[in-house]
Length: 387
Image (cartoon, rainbow, N blue to C red; front, side):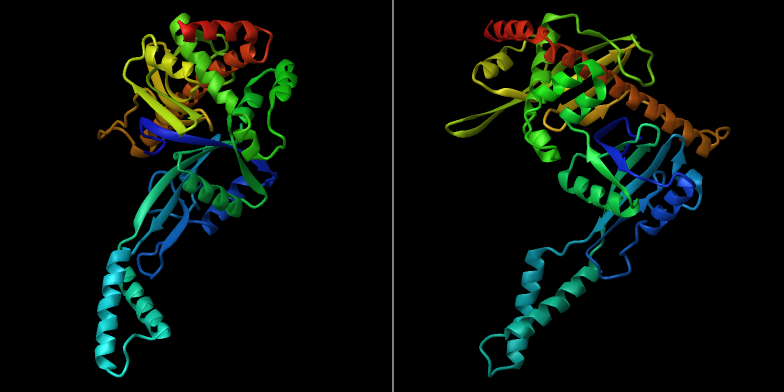
């Protein structure tokens, strides 16, 4: 689902590097045009990847600034078209053609390797020309004020393609995934930076190490939040910059779905709990067996509005992020372009408000986890698990 849908899965990045200080919009226009999507409908090609506009996947030109610039955001979509020839079909056709060739060359018992390769290539190209390319679209929003980018996918292969194509397009810039440790650096006060650095279990600044060696961040956060869901009022205060004012109240709690994993002598063990989680009886049993929570559905409530997301604890990506519904008005008196603009800004407001509540919740956890309060909190959580 795209960014303008009421349910979307999001991965986020920080943009790093140096971009032109002057004529930034013109530079973006030129780069997006140069690396825009190119159709493969009329050529024998397996795939194509490039940029299209957010509003129309068939438009790959960005000469009109309004096509992608909605201050402070730049908006576009990554389109990848791919056509595949089923291997079973290719093999069947190859066998038939090889039999025909041998019938014409009765002095041979098998088709020479070179000739067989030529036949296979001819068949492959013929089948490719008859196969329709399947498009995949992933929306991208770049907040140029915060230099944060969101893309509507969690697929690792797609994310790898996106990172590569973004770097090729915007020369001098690259993307750094926002994972639990980097998000912690973003949300905490300077007074806790030293404690966070001391808690860093990674032996290098490599992103893979920072993610793998600091899995405790996601696990402890989801454990703490599960405990707080049962044993507290679940009320928190906004403490991060964003659409809502500082100290505005909101509610956050875990429910609907929790996943826990662990290792034993038989290998990796995983349990998934679904349905209302009022007292977490089954979850506490899993935790008693040394499993750790690595994924959970979190609800946020504010001013009678409800947000819902499935947090992936390892990467802090947001799966099935559902915001309050916004709709496009359609009548004879409403300008469609203006309405789409209004829909976009309303949608971004709700998405960023949901993320603001998440970051505020995460900071609230870190203020306990990185302080002297954690020892006592961990004892209370252990008692709760055993109860």
